[in-house]
Image (cartoon, rainbow, N blue to C red; front, side, top):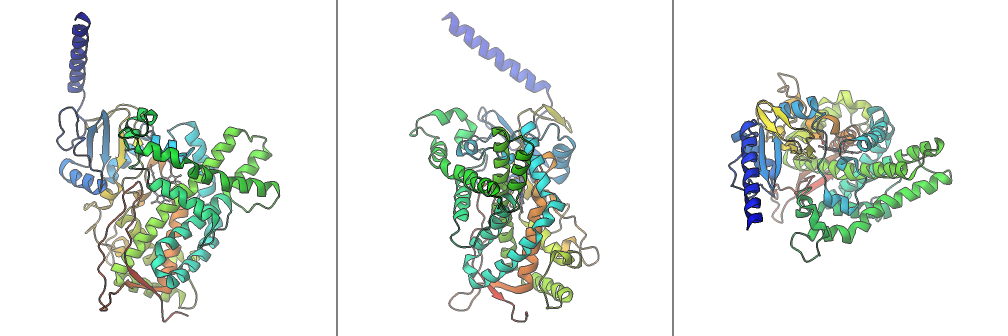
Length: 496
Ligand code: HEM
């Protein structure tokens, strides 16, 4: 009896201390009403999170907090707040939460998942050296050539547009990382890469599966409720590991035989061997950095290309205006090149509007705070998940007039346009900002320019010749893309 009384008194004491502590510290950022004990568990959305969080922010403010299962999640809905925390206080907000399922699947080491620290800095240094604006110049001819191939293939196999966009971005990322040439059909490496993407897209809400929330569940038997994704990860892990190992071994072999193509992996491995620093740890880090280029760079960029295509189906007037600019500059005699960039301001605006209109990583990648912090009188505890709501920021009516509208002219100077700022936040913030953004933007720009210069995009028609209406819907995940829609892509009749 006595031990039970002592235990109950202890628990009651702890509860009182916790209440006193909570009442003396500043309040958390505001948020929707919570239930006793379970907090916001019942109201945390599992679908359309970014849109729902944005609605909440309209009611509660540009920074909101929700609590569930002992975890605080802070959602940032304006560029100003995200800049204040993720950039100006980046010493506190540059960590990542542990993604147990991704680790189990074998996406390791991967910069995007690494906690803030030495290994993360090492990966950023390796990737940065190969992805600066200057380093990206080396891939421009490849991007231009493949954008032309892509536009020709789109005309021939219009209904295959999603597969073709995936090929374009996989071919680029595999070239940059490994120097491999990937063909659009039946390529062994394309298949290995696709398996990896499948794993990424089918492994549950990022960081939000029961095993991510309660990592001890991974040790429970497969029939136990909540263990589904752990089983999935164990069963298919070999596919992801195959992606890490197979291209790596090919490059290592080619290097030894003196026939490796230029690539990030070849450069970095060569340097390791030259400097006698090819330890297993260093090799593993370079292997992970190379794999990361495809894993973080392929799906994201092809999703942005889908957003572009969708909007071209919906906006013939944008195509018309873009073509007038292209024809004026290129004289219908040649195809666009990167050297035309400054002469094609409207094309730049189309590419930028794609990034704003639907950010393909709607909630970015969660950051995690490493210290208790107070911001504008609100308490943000150590270990809080801090999510920049990129989708919400892109819809900020204080910055973008009619934000739902796809309107590239919004960025042009007044009086032609509305002089609104480009949406650079599509690539995240601070010390974790997207390291592949220059490569990604180059891909987007050259594909936009080449397709608009060579193709006409229109809605598909039904058997009565009527336009098929598009019901816009998106996939759910860490990246999100438009679900398939019908369209027609023809070669421009008046082009050389
Ligand atoms: C349109 C295409 C792309 C978009 C919209 C995009 C967006 C993002 C976003 C929002 C983040 C999270 C940043 C943060 O935590 O604040 C990120 C991280 C990252 N991105 Fe991208 N990305 C794209 C293409 C690429 C490409 C082509 C590569 C590689 C070549 C790449 C590599 C990475 C890596 C490695 C990270 C993790 C950085 C870190 O955790 O330190 N991304 N990206």
